[in-house]
Structures are given as C-alpha cells and as structure tokens.
Length: 337
Image: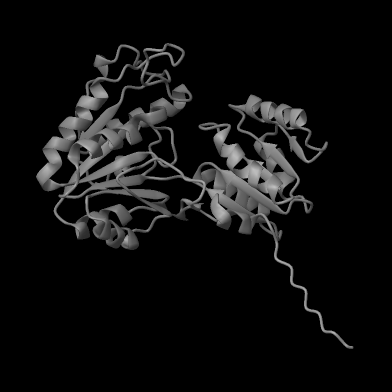
C-alpha cells in the first residue's frame, strides 16, 4: 500500500491511513508532501523504536513523476491519497491501465447553515473557529456560511468581531492566534479570490491594514468575511483554503439545501439548530460525506471519513475504512464422508 499524505496536518492525516493499514496486515510505503518530508522520517524512527519489523513501514521522497511510476507498479495493491482535486486526477491517470484501487480525499467547499432556531452565540463562535483555525487550511474548514435572514446581521457582526480580535503573526509567538499560510503563493491565490469577488460586487468587511503582518507576496494573510456574495463568484464555488468565508442570507431550509448542494464538492456540511429532527431531515438532502449538527471541522475515528462528488471516493476511519485495506476471501467446503 502507498500512502500519499498532505502537508496541512502532516502527522494526523498520515497516521489515519498508515496505522489502520498496518493493523490490517499491509506493508506501507509513505510518500509525504515535499513541504513536510521530516514527518515521514519521524514516523519511520518511531516505528523502528517500537520494534516494527524491518521493511513493513518505509518512506520515500519522490517527485511527481516518480510517484506516478511507483503507484503504477504491480506490487502496489492500494493507494491512499489526500490532497487536491488536481492531484487526485493525477493519481487516477497514473493508475489507468492497472487494477490498483485508490482512496481519494480531495478538496472541499464546506458550508454551514444557521437555522432560525439556532443558538446564535454558539454558532458564531464555533463557525468562526471553523473558518480561521489553522489559517483556514483544512479540507473540512468552513468556507461558506448560509444564515437565516432573521439572524444575518447578528451573525455577520459576530464573525467580523471574532476575526478582528485575532492576532496575525509568527506561530512561534505565544500571543499569535492566526499564523501564516503555507507559502506566499497560496496566500496570493486567496487574495486574488477575494479581490475578484469584490470586483464582482461582494463587500469585504475587514480591512487588512488592521493586521500589520499582512503583506502582499508573503504567507501572512489577514482574515476576511465577505457579504453580498453569490454563486457566480469563486469565493462561493471554488476551494479557498484560507482564513476567508462568504456569508449569504437564506429564507428557508429549502433555499439553504439548494445553495449548499450547489457545489462540485461534497466533504462536510454543518447545520446549526436546536431541532435534531430538522437537522436529520436537512442532512438527508445534503450531498456530502459528513453532516455535523452544532459543530464543524471535526472528525471522529468511529465515523467513516468520506466525500462525494469531487471531494473524493472511498473511506478512512471507522470499521468501513478497513473494507478498503483488506480483501474478502471465501472458503466453501463440502464434506464427502
């Protein structure tokens, strides 16, 4: 089995694939992101110290071409990839012509829906954390928010107030509450997405100049909340992967469901309500792998982690994750005496 792990949670995402694979009896080769190669080396050292037999867990540092050749090797039985949709397509191309299967956890454009009956203070605090945690660099972070029109102004004010009290700075500084993005080009891509939305009529409610560390062409990016958005804008339909979210008012569950499903992605969605039955009813209509009620940006090892549409295929975690790491075998005996 080959695990292709991402940089944003370099140990967690790798462990979630590697440990179940080893427990199921597989030999594992880990190729970590070229931005976090030491994570693979540290895991190798830990397994050696724990007494894992030589060769059961290995790591390789490879470029994209080498990865393609490696996963197409007939000795590879399964590929577990976490990353972008573009990366997922590259894995698919490399495996074409083989019978090697793959699990793909790809991008997300995860929505939150605040119903009329929600606990607004709880929703604002937790959705804000879902937007800005890890500088927005989480596949299941909140990137778009739909709010019952009755609470729209209150929610927007709360999200802006939360963002404005963040301190953007060096993550090694204990007073920093918002760190840089992974690299300058990633931050500039988010800046461009915000600028394009504003040119199309959206309003950015936070002045980046309030954050001294925010500088163009650096990884330090101020948080942002946008309103007057619509789904023609990239900020509402393409993955952002930064500390930014667009907020739109809705008048009903039906409108919220329509907008939440209006995406090529389907990783997670959150519903904020006091009504468990309503959350279940709305959740059943959502095209997404995980539905949260009154929380977001979270995983539970007992629940399958999976996506639909261009957020991927297959599952990790839970007992269902082992279905992809094992093969069934039947024994059909007939006694002749």
